[in-house]
Amino acid sequence: MIAQQWSKVSKELRQELGESSFKSWIEPLELVGVENGIARLRAPSRFVGDWVKRNYHDKIVARLRADHADLSQLEFSVSTAPIVRKAPSTGSAGSRTAEPAAVFEGAPLEGRYTFDNFVVGKPNELAHAAAKRVAEGGPVTFNPLFLYGGVGLGKTHLMHAIVWELSQTRPDLQVLYLSAEQFMYRFVQALRDRQIMDFKNLFRSVDVLMVDDVQFIAGKDSTQEEFFHTFNALVDQNKQIVISADCAPGEIKDLEDRITSRMQCGLVVDLHPTDYELRLGILHRKAAIFAETLGPVNVGDGVFEFLAHRITNNVRVLEGALQRLFAFSNLIGQEITLDMVQDCLSDILRSSDRRVTVEEIQRKVSEHFNIRLSDMLGPKRARNIARPRQIAMYLAKELTSRSLPEIGRRFGGRDHTTILYGVRKVEEMRGTDSQLGEDVDLLRRLLQS
Image (cartoon, rainbow, N blue to C red; front, side, top):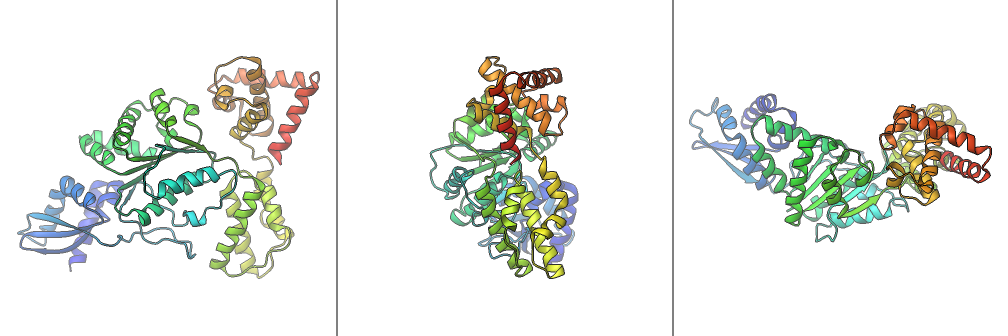
């Protein structure tokens, strides 16, 4: 009876409050009982109970009165175990099905994104070590931890892994994980509903704040202002902040200088593109996980090595390709051979042949000429910077499908005519400058390998 009453109230509150607020505050609650005009609810933490009592007390009481006319008050107790919510399950031993009670996430957590499932290699070992240190829940000498890198290199995996680990090592901590887009959405919603103080209290009372894809707030002045003050308030209280983005703080266009400066005060870690050894390790690890789910599959000689060589740009694509092979092999009952790989993954292999990104080109050219990436994207015109910049523009035009205006935007917002001039300049010089020609050929081979 009680469960049916609460289910009805929950449905009504979901419609009124919206999905985001409902999932954060109402869904974790459990109605325990109603007696002597008091409704007793169980919350995952005192923090949630206090928040709901301040903000939704009257709404909940009004709906429960349909079945309990004398109801006038809510009381909250704290659950001693995590509230179970829907979470992705991999079917492996390391999968998670319950969300940690101390966590209020704006984005759903992936059950497979744990430290146990993260394959460590040279390109990501520093990021992994820093994330593990934060996940221990003790004093950390760097704040914030800023993780950046391209798509599919493990930023979000590490963010989720920190949350899962904190739920085990420090269940007493209040952890808030969400994307920068959700931060902005909640801020705008608080302004609209005139609940800005509640917004401030929420974000400034957590122990660990984790914000994914922070580049999203760039150019959004009001959101940047609130993020800056939230950042300062938490740092002043020695609360940990973890941030991820697709590029370094100084390379996020339209991000306020004061925010950039604050982010650079902590530990800034680049997740480099995967190397061959790391990709091979990922394939072996994922194959073991897929075998647990789909059953044992025979993999022929050279298959893992071939995939590690050919699919280089994105770990997610690599994992998806392997999962497709395992599923196909399981269905038809055949060994995974190189011939099967060619047939089954023809679309992925074709797209991987030229799937080089502008960002990868910029990073590789900067490393080759030993210049800072921020200088390449910035306004400096010194020859030792301008020439590598033009080579990067040329390679971006040759190796990607991006238009000149798109390439210009990725080179610090330059006009497409500037990109065209750089491309033509390199084309002219390749015939007369043998050293430049060798540099371009070497970089092309490195990027396409």
